[in-house]
Structures are given as structure tokens and as C-alpha cells.
Image 1: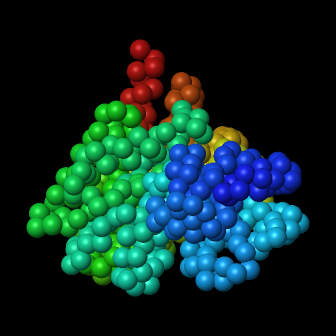
Image 2: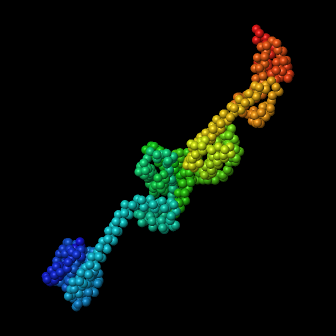
Image 3: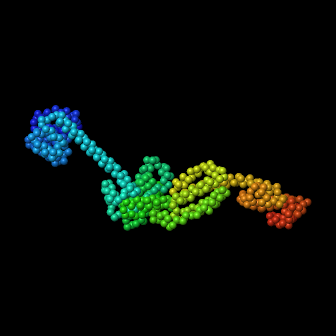
Length: 537
């Protein structure tokens, strides 16, 4: 309800104006009546009404003078002037004091009501505007920290095109614009982020981000222009780059990391961009800091990395020639050689990581290519790699998720280790049958002129292959085994005194008795005849 004072030197007019109009329906409450301008002025100062309905001509002080004095006090009161037709000069003064309504005598109630209604609507609009402005100001103040963060986030992402635009933004948010400054941007990230946050709820993840920011702000102190969280796992610090140089920034980042480790039980790494001397170039330093921190892929957790030290290609990229090693890895896998396969992988990673110059996505692409080579190998022999090693079905995604070379190597060692073990087991079973078959052939044919080539024909494999498998599975060559079988058979035959050494030699597959005796002595340490004599003693 708006409040109004009525001022007129005639009692009947005052009372009539009060009673003839249903002010309450208009949203107005009459809170006072004045008989002259001075009284009207005093009441307005005391009661602070919203509207003054006043006659022009009154004793002591007329309505216009009262209105002028109230306006001089910056009183927002609205004034409706009541005037006779002869008061034209007064009307001009009323215009000068910005009277809100001008009613001629004799007063017409409908005209007065309409004027009052317009003023009420105007006051309500003004109050709504003021309330909206106040609400916006409160919201601005409440959101000022977030808006300042947004400003600096936009700065580091190159959203502003000129220093003037930056200056205007900083001044709007009540922040100083530093001329001739030098700044560097640092980026902090939690190492092994996904694992580190497993013990935190969604709400507490926000708290974790705030905690790291709080530690960063406290330690960076006056060396930092501003610190903010770009996202849950990226805290950005804009440093003043003074005479102390990059070492100071690295020491600050290291101290932040030490405190995060101490209080939050996790490690962070930092990337530091180069120095810039314009606000609009902060985006360059920020991008460099992001590029630098990626190289913890090579250096591991809790790393402080300057862009100048890890700049891709700064020493000239020479992409390793890995085709030979890749082929050997697949071959060792197919043959079930776990140790050899692991050694090849170690060698591949040594080549990839030795200079730390290779882009990380290139290293990842090499690893993915190794996975594809393994997959093709299984496809070519009609087997499903995912069925054989389901625990590695998402290995490619795992590769792209890893942020450290040592972790990437561990993934591939486990992957190829399991696949190589599969081939080893598979070939152990297959080879066991092959060895058994070869031994049967030798057992049935040792008394003849048997050769490795002849055995290979019987098992439909190459001589080299069966020699390799037999040696791998039994620890001795096929020729060695044939000799051992023949000598064992000869030992049994030597128990009979009816057989001559010459006959025994022929019976166990030796065409020459002298050669038989030489081989027998080499294997047993004594001549065949001496062996027989020892048996008879």
C-alpha cells in the first residue's frame, strides 16, 4: 500500500479529497493532512509518504515551494499539483519540479483518480526495477568469485581479442589491470585421477577440487595473480613472472604437490608454460602448460615440467624403425616364447621412450598396432582372440586411458604374456603328441637306416621344424635320441653270449661294427666287449 499526504488550506477540500476517493482501491493509504505548505513539508520529512497531493496556493509556504524543498532533499516523493486556471505561471514552475500530475480546479474526481492510478503504476514499475536491480546486484556479488573464475578461464582460452577488452572486463569485476606485466600459466593435475577419486562421492569430488585450489592459493600467495579450477582435475595458476624466473614457479608447484600428498594422500603433476607479457597471450602459456604436463607420460607421477624442456621435436624427432621388432614379437608369441616376447617389448619401449621426443599419441598408436597384429595372427589361424583372452577385450581403450609409459608397457606385457602362454600351452599339447609319434617311429625303426628326413616325411612336417620342436620339448636332438635308443637296445643284446658284437651292431642299425664300438664307448665310457664282460662278472 502506497502512502499519501493531502495538503490544502481549506478544511472541506482536504476532507473531501480524503473521503470522496476510494484510495484503498487504488492501493493508496492517506496517512496525513496538512493545512499549509510548511506543515506539508514537515509531515513529508517525518512520515516519508510516496505521494503528495497539494494545492498550489497556501499560507506560510505554498505547494510548489514545499515540492521544491522536498526535491532538493533528493526525496523520491511523487507530487500531484492542484491549481486554478489563473495559476499559469505556477504551472510552469510545476513542470520545472517534475510534478507527476497537474489537476485544474474545479477538481474532477475521475481525472484525479486516473492521475493517481497512473502514478501508482509508475511507482510500482520503478520499485520493480529497483528490486530487480537490487536482486541483480546481490546475485552479481554472490556470484562474483565464479564470474571472476570464468573471466580468467576465458582469458586462458583466448576468448578476448584485445587488451582493452580485457581491461574493461577486469575493471568491471573489480580487479586490477597490470600494465607491462609478465605472466606464466601453470596447470596442476591429479595423477591417476580415476583411481584417486574412487573413494570420493560426486559431492566430495567438488570438495577435493576446492581443497587443491585452496592449497594452491595459500602456497602461491602473492606470486599468483589468480588461481581457479578449470575442471575437476585441472587447477590453473596465473603467476607473476618476476626476476626469480622459472625456478621459483617450479618450487612453488613442488611445494603445492608436497602438501597435496601430505593432506590429501595423492600426487599431482604440474606443467608450466613460457612467459608472456600480454593478457591476450595467456592462452599461449596455458596451451604450453597443458602440452608440458602430458609429458609426465615419460617422467611419471609427481612431475614438474616446463614447456621449454619438453617441447615436442625440440631435439628432432627420429621415429624408431620398429617393423623388425614387431615381427619378432608376433613370431615369439606364436611360438609360445614368453621370455623372448617380453624382451622384445622391453626393447620396443626403450626405443619409443629413449628421447622423450615422440608425441604421446604416436606411442599409443604403436601399441595399438601391436594389438592389431596380434589380433590378425589369431584371425589367420581361425581363433577368436577375445574368446581366448576376454580379460583384454577392451585393451585398446585401456591403452588410450593410460597416462604413463610405464603403465602402458605393463598393459602390453600382460596382454602379450597371456597370449603367448596360450600358444605355449596349445603347442605343448600339440607337440606332446608329435614327440610321442616321433619316439614311436624311432622305437619301431631304429634298427634300420632311419634319418630325420625320413621321420619328417612320416609326420608330414619339415626336418627343421621337428628338430626344433623335439629339441625344445625333450632337451636333446632327434639324432641324439636315436643313438640313445640304439645303445640301450645294444646293452640288452650284449647280455646274450650267443651274439657277436658285429651282429649286434647290425641289429641296432649300425652298418659298421667299428663305428658302433666307437659310439658305444662314447655314450657308455667303455667298449661293447668290456661291457659284456662286466655283465658276466
